[in-house]
Length: 424
Image (tube, rainbow, N blue to C red):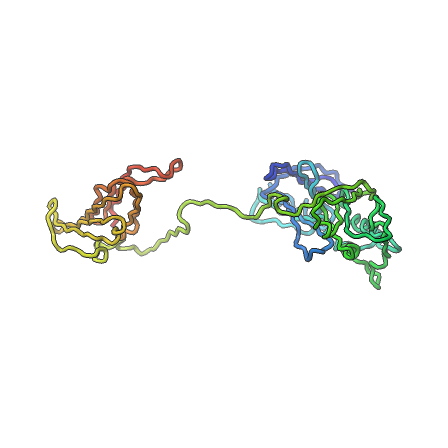
């Protein structure tokens, strides 16, 4: 069998870089690569939480979000039980950024949609599989004899089988008998008996346990970045100067050269990182509630739109105006802070009362008028005089300059007439 490209999709990152994600399958069938569509947040690499700063093996994971254009388009083609069956490769501007496997036996398909819905897939960079394989040979026999730490590491990594490019090595430790050869590392010249990786019953350790037993004594860590393997330690990462890593090819283990790499240690150097936060803008009044009652309300407001509690004093003297009897109701508490308002209450025989509102607002400042006796009414007045304002029973009419909020000019002063009739 051999890996063949099965699916691929592309997207542009927030920095304008072209991203390509490919899914490869290990199969004997001849398949033709099919372009699919990525969903929102199409590809993401994450570093799992570390148990401690000296954790020797540090793997990464990935999340793919793709669109299923038909019902269960990927269920039969991507659900699998073999951990090495599907590879995921992520390229940024044509350079390999991440490589790993789709997690086996992990697939979620929503029943709520028939087409064009997102499907989430998870993957790992191969380090998560170290717990699933034993340190045994292909014929299921145990390894024996002395082997260099370098060879043992490569035995474990080769069982994962990812096409890594290079191995970069730099540890802050050495030993007195080390040859110091440019094409060798201390791991090349330190040996261990393979029998140490089996218990008294001959049961083999997992690949993770073997690698950890090699790295732990030196405070070393192993991680994957950009399709390459890095072996280093905390002391090296803490240095402020560029590090001269020894570079070896992964497939042959041959020394290439000294590769100087600067270690990024600050958020400012890393660049933009998403926080998951968002901004939302919505119109209207928050938490608007519309309710309905089957029982009618007899009256919206009290029949008397003036009451003793509205005024400091209510004059008892009546006079004549336009054939009506009236009295001036001064010192209204509601209007006192803005400008003294004068209500003229009148009646004509047995007819309903009328209330005349006389109010002159300040010329320069904008004021909001809110009638305490009519809580549903709110007016805006700027630099003009309220004219011809009549309260007749519960019928109200205003002709006034008001502030009209529009899309192009949110503060446009327009003369408008508002006529609320028959509110009772």
